[in-house]
Image (cartoon, rainbow, N blue to C red; front, side, top):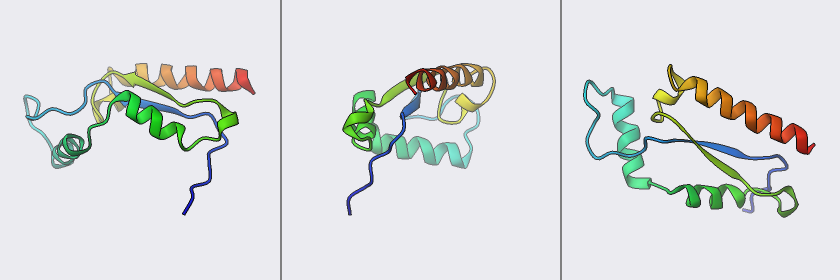
Length: 100
């Protein structure tokens, strides 16, 4: 089954702190443990992610953009990292609007 290419700009936010073999100091919840183990089995570089996302897009729609944001998969959505995530999202939306 062929996947219909996206007709929109694609920006992927990637947590700067990715896979680690051992849990971080302190308590690790069940969900965090599952994500850490999943990341360990499926770790991808920024280039691999960009390549995969670009495959979803139509050739005339430009490339995909992978941006690193501070924190882990979970902590990037909480203080203090969420501010940087919001700023990167705003920048991506501004750039998309300028292209339209």
